[in-house]
Length: 113
Image (cartoon, rainbow, N blue to C red; front, side, top):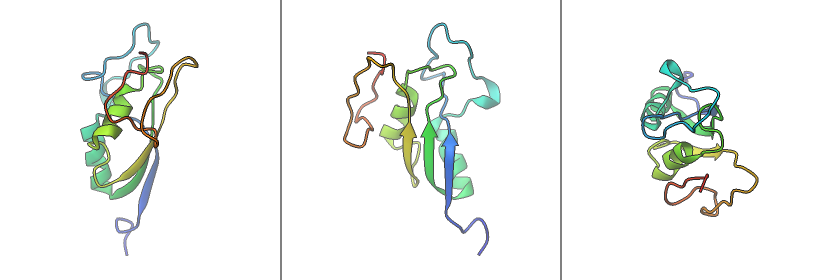
């Protein structure tokens, strides 16, 4: 058995897609270049390395508490096709959360709404 045959977990990664999910106004830092990774790119990396489990962490750089990019990727299934995953994100204290019992919305949501 080689390392490629063993089950793998990626325990901290981000999905950053400013083309489809623009950064919030007045953000201090805007990831660019090699720091950007869309859901499709992430899926390709997971497949290439045989990663079966992933923990996606909402980046605060660029997005703050706007979780639409990560939640959309998880809800569509495009992010983790063939991989089981979960997401960690933050919201402003006054932000209500409406989603499924597992915390993943059925439709993309705007956490700022």
